[in-house]
Amino acid sequence: MGFWQNLRDSVTGRSAEREYEFELPPAPTSADILSSIADVQADTTGKVPPIVTARINRIANTVAVMVPRLDQLGGGSAQAHTVVSTATSYLPEAVGGYLRLPRDFADRRAVYKGKTSLMLLCDQLDLLGATLDKISDAVSRADAAALVAHGQFLAEKFQPSSSLTLPSEPLS
Image 1: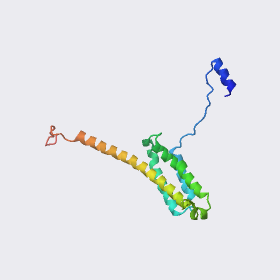
Image 2: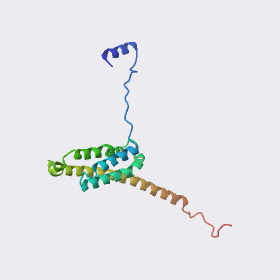
Image 3: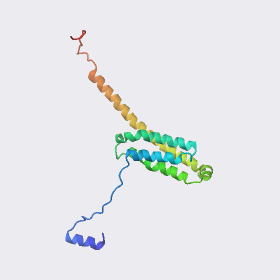
Image 4: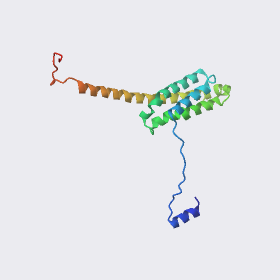
């Protein structure tokens, strides 16, 4: 909206009804998240050393376990965002950057603080894997705590009390 349009609208009493509309992209679905991980695995098959494949598979397995549990983290939580972003952005970008480099250069030439691109990629994948493991452990601990609490509730509810005597003979 231009200056003159704003001035005219303010004089005529028209409010800023002409809001700019924009559309946010839809949130990735569970299928999108799993597909993104599968794409990385397919793109790297036979193209990366086994140490990279092992790290990618570790991340893929953790994401696969976490996707059905994302609702437990809450849609807007930082942990849910980390899981989704790892699968759809962080992992594909890290691996893609490595794959764009010539293999000899990536695996043998130091590029940062004496580390090769391969070493840097492994460090990044280790960080992603450790972060996802912490998130997965936190969710599992919460589930385990809920199970313990429920067990305590049941024990208190159905534990025979000293004031209640049960018949020694079965009722007929």
